[in-house]
Image (cartoon, rainbow, N blue to C red; front, side, top):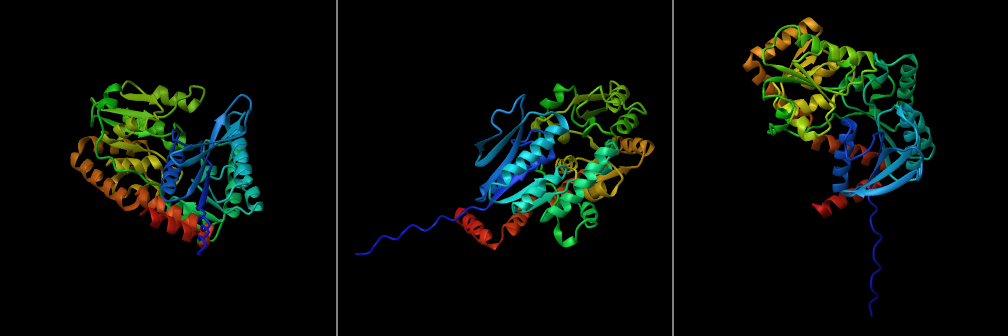
Length: 396
């Protein structure tokens, strides 16, 4: 009589933990959107995915709780601090928890890289997206710049693998680590081929009758020069829409508000993605004043929406936007570029076509997310890569 076969041991899923964002579902910015897209992508391909989420409370009740959202474990960390201190407390608690869990750790940003020491001591594999060169931003004082500079070095050396989202960032990181430790993976965006007009009407706008800027209101994003250049002369019925949070306690924000007239609409920060997509899609052109950083998510999303771009002339924006943009260096040249964008329909059409082509060529989500999966599998090793491939084949 044949004995029944024992069931084979179940294949362990490859596992990844995503640290460094406020959490998902995304409602804050580029890193959160990326974390959500990657988490859903990997969960759909058989991975066990955990994403750390920050919850600010008056008093910590239960430090760590867990829930499931669309097949992803949301690991919520309670912190009883505010501002930068809350971020550091959150980062430290995430590291303490992640050190007790299996899998590769994907860290988005290096602002709390000093805490990665504990992950290395606990023999965890670390991939860090090194973001932009934060310590070069003019808004920071000497102490903050020193902190970011130090943590950039620490993150570069404690991580097993570094991700740069732009070739210029990869060049910078190569001054910290060998090129062989660095992968260049950009940001992604979905093509926008249509959008409702109702969100425009709510702001008193008409399709094609406005320029749009979507950025933090900071000096290195050139928001004040954008407003000043737009208001330098009468633009007729053309408007400028500048999205971004304004705080009148900040001198730069007060200057921006004072410079804006009736032709400049400042609705604050808008996180509803349908509204943001509509504002991009129906704009005459997208204004991009960023001077520091790598591949900016908002610029990539503008390209995917087919926007002509008016961008600050630097190596970051040149590589991302290419022929989809016309470029400025100062307020005078910016005013001239606005004149060109408003007067030349053929130029707008050419840039719009180039924008969509550039988005297809370099910023497809499928390519970006697959590249991250490849890096994670590399860190987990061949023993885990094989089960992952088998699991994908089973679900194909």
